[in-house]
Amino acid sequence: MAYTIQQLAALAGVSTRTLRYYDTIGLLPAQRNSANDYREYTTVQVDRLQRILFLRLFGMPLATIQKILDAPLATQQAALLDQRQRILAERDRLDHLLTTLDKTLKRGGNHMSDTEKFAAFKEKQIKENDAQFGSEIREKYGEEKVSAANKQYAGLSEADYNAMQDTESKMLTLLKAVIQSGQIDSPEAQQVFSLHKAWLQFTWPTYSAEAHKGLAQMYTADPRFGQYYAAKTGSDKAASVLAAIIEKYAV
Image (cartoon, rainbow, N blue to C red; front, side, top):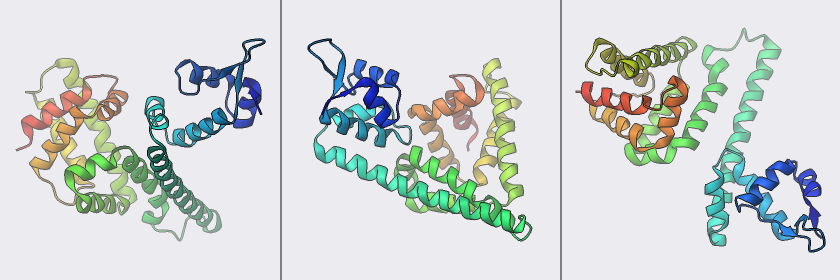
């Protein structure tokens, strides 16, 4: 059976604009009706679109998806199995979140500890960070240290959690000032370092200057960190400036 672009869009729950874009970039090439040159999609394209949508669930870049789907079947299966694990983890997170909400509705939250109240939200952050940076962090620091850091973060009280967020906010504000001045040999830069160190210590069971510098290297080597700090500060230089500050003051 061949589907028109409108029919496939309705079937898959995506827009025709999305399908046209996927066709344009070669991610989902459509066939052409010989009579009118309209796009048509057969079972092959339908199956490929299903895989695209599964891989896209957690924000995987389209270029990465295209490489996977153009690779041998074993590579595709491995990627889909990985997505399955992420879906299971997301289901567990949502179940936990629902349980927490049910307790809040039933008890008004009065009989829940601070840790219980915020556990589901912290778990969400842990899973998001692990999905985005987990493999690289584990390669650099090892499973034991990563697990210990996650456990410490999950156990933060409401006060500590809020203090951690406040510490990062102050650090980012000062980082913006350092970026504007261009001076990392300054009291503001020293404060950025101190605040960043304090922010890390909310989740790091033990601190070392060496590990701190290792994280700085990741800030400059991995563009995802650059994107994170650019979004937080409005400057594409943020990650590199922060890394330079850490290199200078972590001793």
